[in-house]
Structures are given as structure tokens and as C-alpha cells.
Length: 288
Image (tube, rainbow, N blue to C red; front, side, top):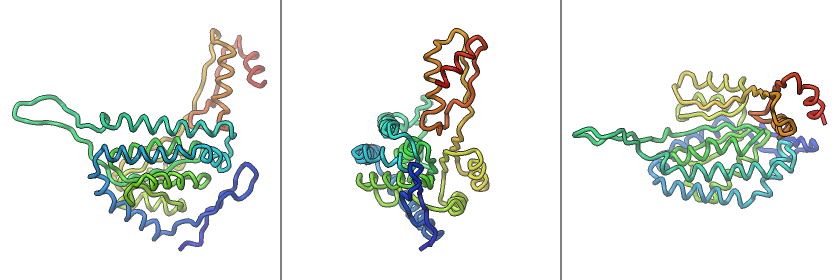
């Protein structure tokens, strides 16, 4: 066992909120081995059964919504009044993806051709490594975890060291739902071990949400393996306020867009351009 530890200090009061041992290299390899062995089982599980199991997991997760919301705030510091909204958003996205799965994953008919039966069928990739950030720990994870599982892939989730309990809560929900062993796992591991995992045969796709700097590293470690990458690296999001804008509405919503979630959002408003006749009024009201 590794002697390295993950120490989570809450931004609420600076206290140690959780401690976990970091998985060693051999432990990370065992997680990958379990995932690789689980691929065939999950791939050949029917889509209706996959939908039923993931639905049960979402139900088990949402049943703990109040405790989950409070735990988010203690881990990453979001105002407690805003935390329940993420659980609602998680449920909304998960149930939407569950609802569209039969159509989205069905065979594609390219049209008739005499003497042929033609179709395009989507096949699971295999092992998906999901690397999720701390600012919206459940909303970002659900975007890759649920569709990957529904499509017949197995998932290894590595959450930010600032929100490690989120990975554990998702594991608990999938275990309660009865997913086969190895289909969904989480890792508390060092950056170096995750870098090595990305470069290791057996991982078939990486879904990363985070900074541009780390996105470059993910791309580099995967570059010699020809595997797919999903890199959601945030934006630099401007807003324009024209002279004919609904003034109070614009100010209220741009303040919210800039500072909701303590400003820690991939799509936070980072620049505002205001037409000159409104500028002084806009700055005064925004400051208030």
C-alpha cells in the first residue's frame, strides 16, 4: 500500500474534511485490469438492462440529495444556497440521457440497396477514463459517465483531489444499483499515476474537463496511442450590452453570470462590453 495521502482541506473553515490513501501504481493497474475484464460482460448486457441499472443508480444517488448538497459545499466552498441546484442538474441531465438512449444508440439505416441489408451500428469503445474537476463535480462527471455506461463502455472516474468524496458517492450509487464488478470504479491517485494510466494500453478513451494546461498534458500522454479524447477546457466568455438592452435585466444576469458558484464556472462571464451611453450607469448598478 502507498504511504501517500490525499488531504482535503475545506475552504469553509480550513479544517481537514477528509483524508484518503492514494492508490499506488500496482493498485491503479489492478483497477484497470478489472475494467478490462468487465468490458465483455457490460458490452453484451442488453441496452434495456443497462438503462435499468443506470436508472437505479440515479435513483439511489438522488435519494441522498440533501447530504450530497451539503457535502459539495464543505469540499469546494460553494455557497450552500447554490449547492442543491447541482444535484437537480445532475438528475435532469442523467434522466434526459436515459430517455434518449434507445434512439441515440439504435442502428442507423443509410437507405436501401438491392441485394444488401445495410446498417451502421455503434460499438462500445471499451474503457473510458473520466477526469472531472471540482467546480461542478457532479454536473461535469455526469456528462461522460452516464452516456459512456449506457453505450456499453466501462468507466474509471478520477475526481479532483478537492472533491474526492463525489467519486465515492457515485461509486456507492452504482454499487447499490447492482452494476457488475469493474463496470464503474473510481480512483484516488496522484497526477503521475493518472498520466501513466492515460498512456497505458487498456484505456480506450479519456474524457477530461479542466484547465488548458492540463488538457495539453492529457493530449501529450495519449498522443502515441491513437485513442479518442474529449477535452472540455472552458472558455473566455464575453457579453455585450447594447444601448437598447433591458438595462436592469442585463445587469442582474451578468452579475449572476460572472459570480455564480463564486465565479468558478467554465462559462463564467469574464468580459463585458457596454455601449458608451450606458457605461457609467451599468458600472454603478453592477457594483451595488
